[in-house]
Image (tube, rainbow, N blue to C red; front, side, top):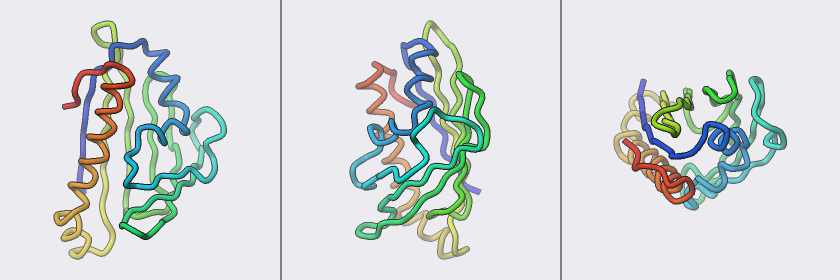
Amino acid sequence: MNRLERTQWLPKSLDEVWAFFSVAENLNRMTPEFLKFEIVSGADEPMFAGQIIEYRIEAIKGIKQRWITEITSCEPQRYFVDEQRMGPYRFWHHLHRFEIERKGVRMLDRVHYQLPFGPLGAFARMLFVKQRLKRIFDYRAHFMEMEFDADPAT
């Protein structure tokens, strides 16, 4: 199992941060252009446990792919978890946690993931997937710096 973890402090209220993250349509704004990210369905209401959201992404350059996630748990203003139901990963579990800290919010992203195809998937991870995920989360961290005046991510 592979893991990617980032934390970032945002000098905003928990209400402001949650209002932004609980609207799936905001994913468009914080996703890099190279993914050609498009929400297909399921993002038309505020986040709730059991919500199914379908996207199209360009996981591999030139090839559009469906990615379906489910919000498997959600405690407003504390955390939510999205898990892949169909898409490029064999396993994808993404925890988003929000905690009040220093008159702002500490945001945690913790992703556990595994690629399909056994040793071939492990090779692909080392070759480009690990770096690509890093680029995606770097872009997101930079977006938070610009949009929310956030500290750099760690």
